[in-house]
Length: 298
Image (cartoon, rainbow, N blue to C red):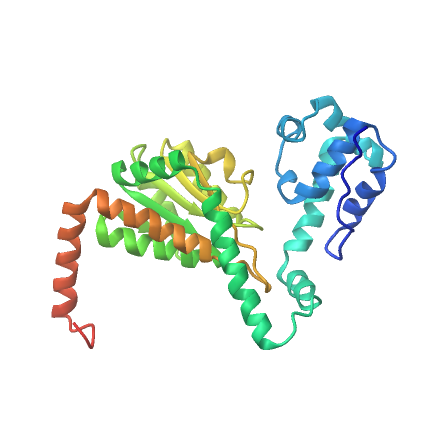
């Protein structure tokens, strides 16, 4: 007779709802036990998933998912999911993350530095493990074949958007960074065409403006390439290709080592496949930089 798999002991990061779900494990049917286990192990992704998506992922029927919140005292699934979203949002807030990570007591500075390095290596490995070759190929083709590329990323993701736009402009000269500061994003939307590509960077907690701009691009018929930290996120419904980046950090913010690496990988391949054009553009740019006496060492 098979025994139920034991879950790890609850941690300080588990919220009241998750603790209530854990208490159900010894009281529920086999199917509801499977649902409870799924929520405990995948709660950050579950907050954005629909009932059919949850049913498929957990391997149960949609009716089983729909009835599960009743065991926790909820009248319906939307109210349960809304409360779960609020608790997950709380965990993603920088003050909470900093307090949680400080409580772990990483030891001396040498050990802490090694922990950061090991975490970055882990993020890189997990990111590339999740990259599908067909998505990689499609992303490259979308970039190359597009008339123009519009790049957006706010707050912590802005550095990624800037890096992507800066490098793409050097090799193909057909990209713009969308900014909210002066309202010029409205001009960008007016100029956006169906043959264009919108590239969006947004990670938990997901900035509304980035999601809105990616959605607007999709509604205008453009293709969309997105970078996030979840397979199912607010960006997913509007993404033609979505890369899931592992950004787990040991401080109060995300770590974008995997994202920067994937940008270099993608645009490196783009430059290789457009070698003649990219070389010419880089030569022209380098000549102008030398004329401008930009560098100490030319």
